[in-house]
Amino acid sequence: MILVMGSFRVAPEHIDALLPLARKVAVETRAEQGCIQYSYAQDIDDPALFHVSERWTDRAALAAHARSAHMAEWVKARAGLGFHDRVIWLYAADDGEAI
Amino acid sequence: MILVMGSFRVAPEHIDALLPLARKVAVETRAEQGCIQYSYAQDIDDPALFHVSERWTDRAALAAHARSAHMAEWVKARAGLGFHDRVIWLYAADDGEAI
Image 1 (cartoon, each protein chain N blue to C red):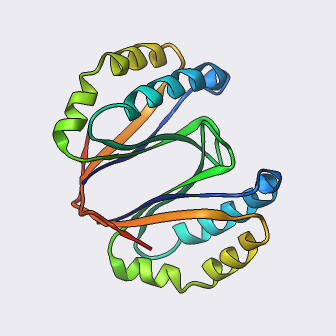
Image 2 (cartoon, one colour; image 1 turned 45 degrees about the horizontal axis):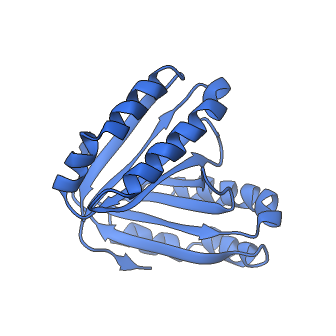
């Protein structure tokens, strides 16, 4: 399984503008082939710090996601909202175990 | 690397009571040996849905965390706050790559 974990920050005054854009790209991404999970969440210590949690069946699915029109739209839109400190990691993992 | 990803829900009326408890156990856990990341965040679609993102150096560190006094305190405290739908997965992963 391919896991993506990471975070980004947005200017606090733009959180409310970012939220509908993030919801839109999340809905579109969850409909992609190979997407198991795609979530955005706000850190409990700082609502301007967003966590990204993604699970994909394979690298090809994630690569296709990166080339999607909705990702391009999201990248363009967020740039005007004080988007910064993007730190996203991709991991190749086993199938996991519930704990 | 050991990754832990998952989520849980809390009764909406208890979110405000859960937050300081979650912050406390997160601070205590981040001080543990082998803990690289330990974050709680609220889903952008539903603030009662919490996402868990953890990175650990190895399974032994995570096992020690599971036995910690602060985890026992957190498990006990959250039970009274409508804590439910806990779905947490452990993954054995590579060291990852920034994307």
